[in-house]
Image (cartoon, rainbow, N blue to C red; front, side, top):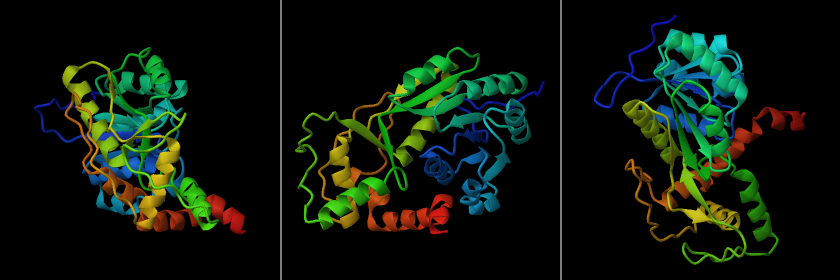
Length: 291
């Protein structure tokens, strides 16, 4: 059995090495990039070479390491943990039985004190909790309603509203707090940079308390899907003007690190749209269509 790492406490200043799985999820690459920009050392379990290629510069700097493999391969996960002396595990996709079984096998042979932290939407959090609590390791769940950021679910909705405007149907003038949402329910939107911060905060909370926990994170940025699509288009056209939105008090002291307007411009502004359109044109599916 591997001796395992020395897990840092709240008072400790030991180097943290984070193993990341679930990177092929819709928000995985963007969330991973935020973790790297925050200065974390990351070892990623990846099965797609194109995903790894997007982080070539981080790999050269030594803060990002790739281990080729699948989440349903417990021996591969164990070797990742042991070779890189991992202190935390982040999973960026839905929780599956095969993943949890592999983690259990690997952690029993490595170090049971390594926490498993995951980001889950409110629609999947209960299923994730039921799976995780049936296995003998500590976990932390970051619960959000919706996640947004550069390249996350952006092009289709923006294009739909752009087509509507070009067809002579202007978008409605909407302002925060005055939006007509009809029968649609509102959802709370969390920016990817703030979600990365939430993952790190929950990891330290699990380590400090030495017990599993589920923590909701709400920015106070609540909109229907129709309202959100309009905000995306306003950000793209540079016509975004929003009033300040109050964030609910959070037990861990978490709050958005930028305004809603700043987060929207970074995610859906003209520069973000151009960058993501360029990236999409080089995707395997786009190349197949061109061929």
